[in-house]
Length: 482
Image (cartoon, rainbow, N blue to C red; front, side):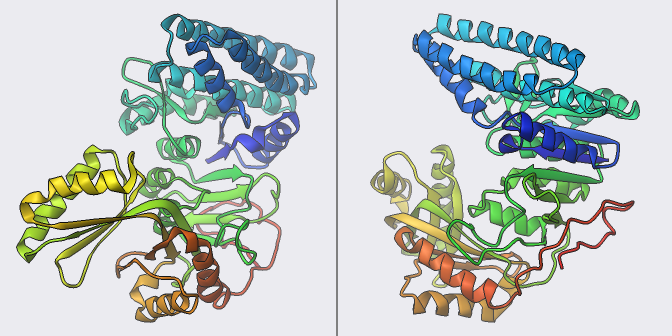
């Protein structure tokens, strides 16, 4: 069984929805299609909701009318009268429910997290109706299912946590029978339901996450993420001319890339697939014949595959007087960062064993507030605390890379030749990334230099080829990349 996920740009208008439907029908049955809202619709829904909460009825109405136009254009593109009438009736019902929710927000005078989740769900719900209608319009039996009846979560609105057992039971009870009837099942991405039945959202990367959640719950053979890029790239192609598609990477490499700033996958996306050993393939609806990138349990090769940058960070250093104080100081720092909601992107201990270095996301008040906050936490240890802002982490990612002593030497030599100071560096034999903290102003130069030295100089550019046909065993087939 295949799970295909189509992002917002892949369902932006009637033409893109038809093309995504065509791609879906090229895959063998059984298949599940997960859809995002049409590009721009989520922002318009939030604009309408915020305006309703602040009493700006005209602004709210204008946003809603734009949404009606986007959905109406897809309905009008359906060829069969019966499907066009059916889709319009279902979309009108969803739009009426949207109006009711906006009216409730206006009465409350504010946009709550609970209402926000309900509001944004209308984008995905509408697209699931439209995609199913487009599939049927082309002769493919299809049904839509709203994920807030399938994906079980807790009640943390805006970033709910998955309940795997409840989700698996629901998917097997609701989706599996539809698949057994020979229908393509179209499911909303991004949303789930709390124990009380309220609609929740899964946070950043939620639609991709939905695809792997459903893939795991239904024991899929493969999950395909269809987007507007041709796969996982070795660097940001807007900034690095030599960037190329990586034909195959491991789950660990994909998670490291996502963690350190790559935009194709959110780190959570991979986890359900890892648990079930399901390959995840990244493909482009604009270049559907290209092989893309397949993410599997095992890596291909042991060199550096990609270089990426995570910017907008702070560098925090803690120096204690006595070695025995380090553990207590570190525990206090981690606790304080956690309570402040600051994500630690990088942590390292100096060889002297008296210094800990943390690279964290920007926090309210910046470095000065963070320094004072941590100074108070470690006061009993008489520790010195310093903080540097405008820091970037540069990650060179590739399985086995951290295990090669020569690679870190090449990394430092390359940055040294470019005159880029290294504020901190981390190498772990069990990891798949070499990570260096540098001034943010020099992050781009660092990525260019390291990509040229560690990727372009060691791997040939791939030969363009058509994407392979799908056959029996997805796991045993080779990846055609040249």
